[in-house]
Structures are given as structure tokens and as C-alpha cells.
Image 1: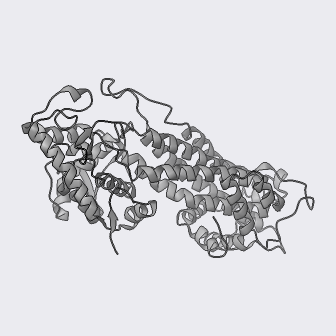
Image 2: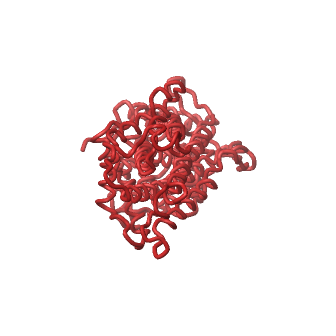
Image 3: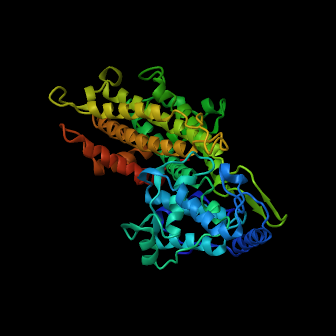
Length: 507
């Protein structure tokens, strides 16, 4: 497998996924090597000249007015890392840790951080050899960057902390020795360069946005199955309706539904059975489409952030300047991830309401809770409960983290983004939402089994087939969570989306 070359300017979401989930190797471009070296030359010159520059010859945060001699620079950088490693909570997933390491390396390769090339290469070597630092999920304010969690990443580089190597948790020193990677001694500016950035929140958000792009397609497929199970009216998806309100996501969703439902004899036209459907069926393009537009917006912001220099101070070798700014502030990501969380939560919200229409005999015209033996059997009664519980939890999680701030560092850092909290919440909303959609898929397939002599659409027939390959029709009550887990796994693996895409065009 060829290496993914990073230069700080051209990394893509797809490449992040390849490294995070498929263990693709990483290397620097020749141009990146040159830029890193030039920035370091300027830092070394300022050290020799004992020039007062924040983070290079001074302390950090409130201690920015404390001068540090060049003899103390190594001790300063080590102290920075060990004192800042204050993360708490469960360790981040391995794929997120790999994405963090990649994004930090990519930001450093822009040549505005002043790190030594050898130190950057150590981080990349850890990534390539699978030395994964144990990074607690909590403790970041999202400005001055993701200091606490990134410090846990750097601990391993200096032979401290903990790491997972070849499936076994061990000390950072043991992991580095076992992998044959030399432990480093940080020098001037390097500790700050490694931890002062938004890479934790951005890594979580980048993997989530990638998954959400597939989730949007799955949501359209699940909705289409429910439309058929409810003998839904397809006139509401007519292109003319959406042409006169031309939101892109709305138009794409309407087109997806018509493509997925092509050749269906379940669907109806207005006036054949009823004049119009309830909003959860009739307004799928408007609801799903708005979430689709939100995902597109957030993806654009993430694409900017993954190729940005987000530490402080920034080195500009060509101008021979070192400028202290605020690119570490996570506000652009915090607002984006809060928006994304709300958008995903709405996919779950409308999905659960469609499931309710399927299980409620007063709304569906089908047997109560989709069981032929109601009373003796409960059918999908509690499956809908579970979906409702997840939707309610999402409503709590969708409260924006970015509207909060708390001053730190003796009020030097007096506004923070909470962007990492926003990213973690959004990931949890995503996990809840795939379970809600998994329940809708099961309920829709079960509802379809009560009909005779109808044909499913071109796309829904393939989705139904895959569901039934893994989950049989519910004839009588059985342990239901096994079925939900199977349905959730189908969503997570993208098996349904990939199969349907082979037959119909889904945007």
C-alpha cells in the first residue's frame, strides 16, 4: 500500500479514514521537510539571541511574562507536557487516537510550528508502527487548543504515560522500546507545538462527518421502506415541488426517494387512498434535506481545519517573524459540531416518529405493534420505547456546548470554546441515531411482511433482502436486542447503503 503524503495543505477526509481505520502509512513530502527545517532554523536563532518570544523563551499562559533562559528550555518543555497531562475519563477509541496523531503531524508539517524534523518524524513513526497513546476523553476546554488530551499523546514520545501496542496496554517507555522507536528529549518550542491545537476535537468530528455522509443515505433508505409500509404518496417528492424551494439537500433527498422507490407498487398517488400523508412521510425531503445541508456546511469547515496551523506562536520563516495569535481557539469547530449534533439528532427524531406510525394501529392500519398475536406477544412495543428513549437522550445532548465558557489560567484564557465537548456529544448523538434508524429498518420490514401481492421499489427491495438475510420476520416474541444489534451493525458496516447504491443512484 502506498503511503499517504502529508504537507499540511492537502489532507482529505478519505485519507484520514484510511489512516485511522485501515492503518495506511504516512510520510512527509519533500516540500514539507523543507518548510519544517526552515521554521526550526528561525527558532534556533532566536534561542541563541535570547530574544523574548512567547512559548520559546517565556513561560505559558499566565506565565507568559516569565523569561526562560536557554539552559532551561528542555526542562520547560518537559514540565509543560507532564503538568498538562490532566485528562480524565475513558480512553478515546483507537481510530480517534490515530486520527489525532495524523492531524497533529499534518498541522506541524505546514512549517509554522518550529518543531524539529526529527521530533515530527517520531510522531509519524509511532503512527506507522501502531504505538497508540492512551488519551483520556475529557479535560479539554477547546482553547488554548486540546492541551490536556494532546499532552497525553506527547507523554509517550518522552517515555512517560501509557500506550497500546500490538493490542496490549503498557507504559509509554515500554511501548517505544518494543516498537524500536527512540524516546525523544523535547527542546525549545516543541512541547507547545505538539499540544497547542484543535486536533482532538477535529479528529472526532472528521470521523463523525465521514460516517454521517453515509448515514444520510441510510436514513433516506429507511424512510423509503416506511413510505412503502404506509402506502405513502409519492407526489410529495415530485421534482416540481422542490424546484420552487431549491434548497440543495431537500432536492437531493427527494431525488433519492424517487430513485429508491422506483417500480414500487406499494406507493400511491394523491387521492388513491388518502389526499396527503402526515408530515413524517410527506416532509422527508424537507427534514432530511436540512440535515444534509448542515452536514455539507460542517464538512466544509472541517476540510479547512484539518489543513490549518492551529498552534501558538506561529513561525513565519520567510518574513522572519514569530507572531502570537489565537488559531488554537476551537470556536469554528465548536459551533460546527453543535450544528452537526442537532442535524443528526433530527434524523433520529423523525425516524422514531415514523416507527411510531408503524407500530400504532390507529395510524398504520396494521396489527398493533406489528405482531399478529397481540396480547400474548408484545412485538415491537418496546423497540419503539428504546427508540424514544434514545431520541430523548439526543435532545439533552443536542444542547450546544459552544454557548458555554469558563475562564482559565488566571483569566488569561478568559473565553474558551468547549469544542471538544461538542465533538464528543455529537459522536454520541450519532451512535444513538444509528440505533434509532436500525429499529425503523426492522419495523418497516416487519410491516411490509403483512402485505401480499405488492412489489418493493428498486432500492428498497435490496435493502429489505439484506435485512431479512440477517433478521427473520418476527413471528412470535424473541430476545429483541439481538435483532437491534444486528440491524445497527448493518448500518455501521454500510452494507445496506453499498448494496442499494449498486442498483440506484443515491446522492
